[in-house]
Amino acid sequence: MLDTSSTKDRLQMVSDNEKVTFEDPAVLDTLIETSDGDLRRAITYLQSASRLHAGSAVTKQSIVEIAIKSPPWHAPL
Image (cartoon, rainbow, N blue to C red; front, side, top):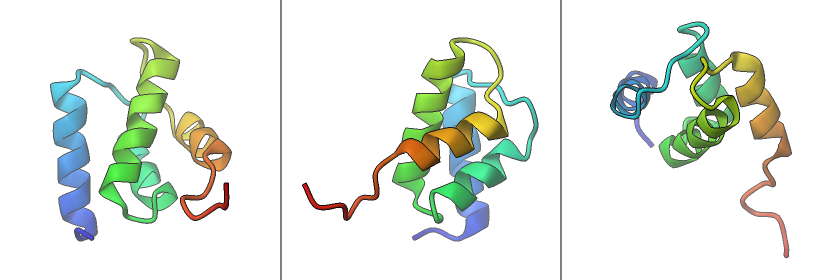
């Protein structure tokens, strides 16, 4: 896993490239926390939140809701 600073930098780069905006800069911290520092999972949450907000700013609340509704990676099928 990347350190928190590197993960945050990558998420900012992805959001800038995809023109995703945030209601609050702390949304990036929420992404990192809810994804347990897993960059791929954080990007997935970011992508889902971006689609949910369809052009409006992504919120911390939406990230938390997406993370809660996502099944754990190790859940049995």
